[in-house]
Length: 319
Image 1 (cartoon, one colour):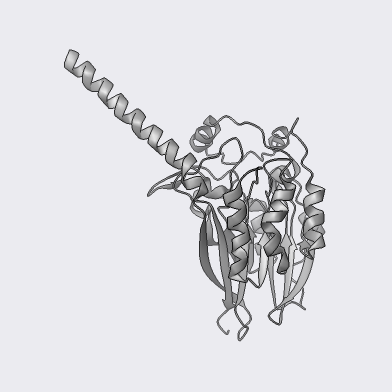
Image 2 (cartoon, one colour):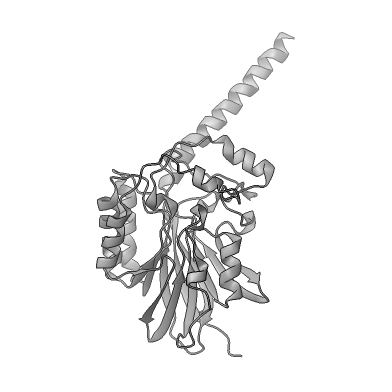
């Protein structure tokens, strides 16, 4: 009996040690292990020169994150043709200057942006068991028809998002919050259609509906959170590419299994990276960035390192 009791204590000790090691790795190493992913997508007109698009997302900047700031600034060495920022830049109301400083070298390139909920509202402590309950219930988002997403921001601190917007606008980046924009990149007429964050129901697709302009060589949609209603709308309107963030790639993933939750109603298999979406008899490419930050109250990542993505848009095959 005593031997069995000792063996049980030993097993518990080993389990606790493994758990502590995983937490230490997730909070101490992986959350700062910044990566650049490279993806190629055939969406440009036949014969067009390839276009290099750098997507940054979910920075969640907090004062003092020097390594993240230096890494972001260093991405300018890639010399992208275009920068797309898919929101959630802030996780600290005092971090606007640090965010603009970090992105400063990238602001020299043509760019466009949308905002996420954390740009508007400061983060609040969350119960980590929500991840488990979401996995068990199959309800991976908090944006329900009853408006529960709004309840999550009641009493939240309002971030100085207008200062962030003014910094982006002063650099010439195109504001895509429920707006259309146009840029000429590598002699390609590019049209961008963006939405404000669906996660807190600020999206207004009716204001930008109608599909790509006939004057554009290529068009794509930009949004922070990849909710299905938004993906359906962009795809049915014949946008060949949609860029999004928000999911953090699941943030806490299981090796060889993947994400447990997505924090929206997209399926786990498309929680990050390149995939496709079908709606209205049409198909779009979808790229979801896993982002390079975390909510300041859950500063951990496991089997899902922080990232930015260099998307090389290439000519599609001739019809």
